[in-house]
Image (cartoon, rainbow, N blue to C red; front, side, top):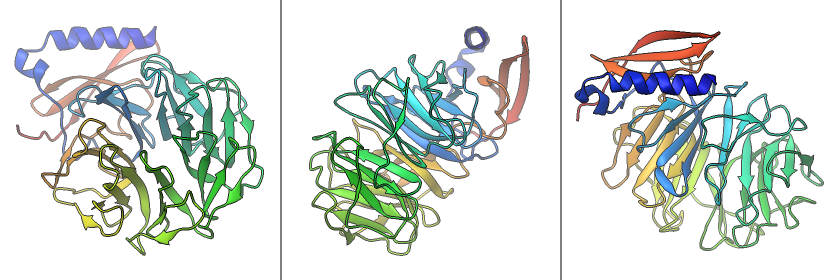
Amino acid sequence: MKCLLILIFALIASACLSPALADSSWQPTGGLGGGGIMALAIAPTSPQTIFAGTNDGGVFTSSNGGGIWSAANCGLTNMDIRALAIDPMQPQTIYLGTNTGGVFKSTDSGFSWRGAGKSLTGAVLSLAIDPNRPQTIYAGANGVSKSNDGGSSWGAVNKGLPGPVVSLVIDPSASQTVYAGTFYAGVFKSNNGGASWSNTGLTGTGVNSLSIDPATPQIIYAGTYYGGIFKSVNSGVSWRSSGLAGKQVYSLAISPASPQTVFAGTQFSGMYKSTNGGVSWKAINGGLNHAPGYALAIDSTNQEILYVGSNDGGVLKFVTSAGSAKGVAAGSARSLTGCWWLLFAVLAGVGVFACWRNSQFKQKTIKMELNQP
């Protein structure tokens, strides 16, 4: 009921705006006071629809490629989001992993959320959905947990797997094959849906991110702590250095249209792009004023459009052909907590927000910097 009332109030308020204000886009260059973006996900059937998980402001969503964002936190009891995953067959179903509250699930495109299984609690750092059986979900935490019923129940699948799991990917051609990037022990692999795990050829390092080539799934990239990028061309049997040595690589994304094109987000050195499968890399930091953080997402219909989640400046929309980034910040993780806030007007550079809390509407204003068209 609270969620519905907020939406109705926002729609009424926007209808009362002048046409110029109602149609204008909110594209702050620096965000509303900062806030780290820990996870990004793009709807598979609607690439203009983006979800951003923040480290203390919950989830934000945009339906126009980042032009306007609104909070989508109804039902969430933990606002520190660490992972997002969208059901490939039913994209209105979304899962998110939180830092202390386990997994939440939405079946209405993020409009409302509920806890997904009481048996999975604590930090969930990564999520992966079986592309062939989307009721099967893997959650990386202090090990790996698996659900076979869409998150209603979970069981540990940790035989042979050490320590926290930071990243997960599934082989799209053989979904019983799962790779886990661990906090300190390299990459582990399961050929039986998590029933058992074994070391791959990459050991003794923390693995922040994994990305698997959708066309040739024997090819896997691993982004590491201070070790740069490693690449395997034989399903993890062996690995070789693939550039950016000495850098913390927190995020990786492979272009679905051109798998030789790979993007990497580093902690302190900005964004990099390779067009030859990691043989060489080029910095693409024009206009990128905020260090990229933990999340990358590529528009499935246009590989030149890349969304980058920064650790202090919201979401940046990066048009790689232009070589510059454009701010589309997903709200303020610090300013929008404690209530279901929703932006419903921009007046002379000031964002007007409203929320429903304790049976009352509340309002706040926050100054924003707007890009000129």
